[in-house]
Image 1 (tube, one colour):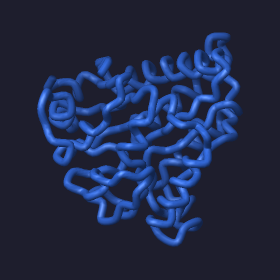
Image 2 (cartoon, one colour):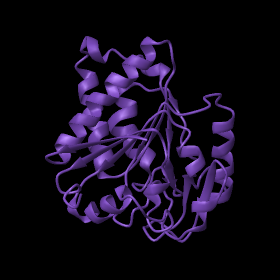
Image 3 (cartoon, one colour):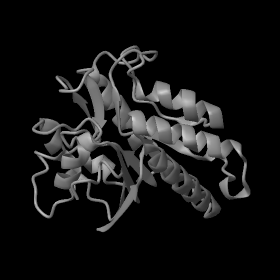
Length: 241
């Protein structure tokens, strides 16, 4: 794996670095005539990244000249709650990024208003991905919890061993308890994966995720096996490396 570590001083530095590289990557993909498919993540650092992308895009610099109607957005996981719930990853991403730049092709994981239960939501989302014709993501962005979870794949949960596209999650150790997540199989069908991790509370999980040895059932982040993987860390999150 071509693993890259980028350690920035603080979360603001992480957000700026990720936003710059994101815009460069999308411009390059569209310059090759491609329609990039991107899987977004949630959380506080993701929100900061989304705001920074939207801010930089609004400057309309030639280097950031993106046709947003030719970028397709997905999510690595979502909370199974009503569409207007503040717990929805998509709600925040739309408000501070996607609606701001005018993204049109946004595939949300079905909410509790659109599916009977997390299993139905996961099945519908899997069908969306199967029918998209993308084959793989150009980019998957992931956060990581202090327990080493990624998307909604938690330590010791059976979803870690499921061979499918999307899976329902119930009894999540992190509220809300009902979620839908892409599996390792789906997340690993990517040209590149970027981890966005900040805070000293995640430093031990970062150490375990990047150690030479370890079990994916203890630290799910180890299940991401994409050749082009970059970890964007602030100094606190990198403090135990």
